[in-house]
Image (cartoon, rainbow, N blue to C red; front, side):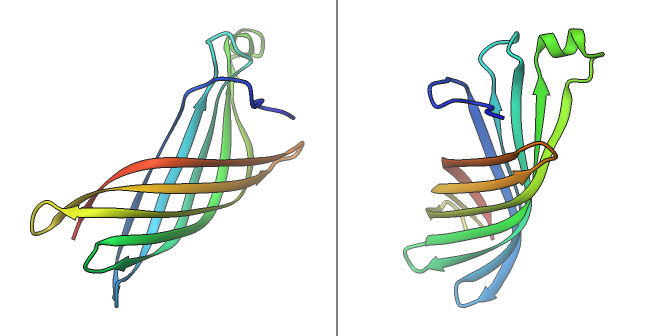
Length: 153
């Protein structure tokens, strides 16, 4: 099953949240929630959107005093799809489907700047890959994101 082709254009959004604490020496262990949503071209597409949600655990290491970090996360992934107008009209309004479950990995690097005694803002370049398997197919998703962050310490 081919969900999108390289020549197709669509909007993609994503984000993440991590909660954790320092274990010393610049290392942080955290729980992560992250995901992406890819939208279809129009409301009449057969496939309106494909979304990926991940729950995982991660480790971050800060290089001080530069406040540059490397981070990685491994988690459980689930993939959902929402059908378009034709699916809604012809298939009894059941347009949301669970496509599959699997594993996901996210790795990134970034830089933060302190703006107060407790708050930092930053940017990171993060790559992710997810592998989900359903009854009828295997879905591989990958991407590269430029993320902005706010950190409370």
